[in-house]
Image 1: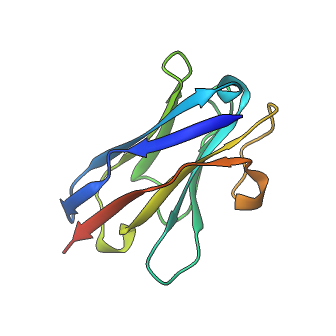
Image 2: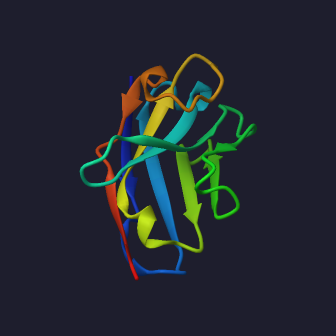
Length: 125
């Protein structure tokens, strides 16, 4: 069982930066691939980024590649999403998710076992 709590969202102007954090508790974080997804108002939740349980093999959606960076600190049982050069279209609720069992990162939300409650990111133009 892994519990996830996101933080770090807020309101930022276009071109600005935010760093999201996802703090985990419970057993299994250190052997879980972690992903970030987002859901804009009225739209489906989509993949943003993912990282394997060792902190390698980062993958990104094309829409954020070169602007966002996913990382993790297993000692702090936290995964991060550094978001730079933010655009209004990045506005969404951002969710972190865990995929246990030393499995590979995945862009598919149905592959993840545990989800946080989300944090709102709003980018103004």
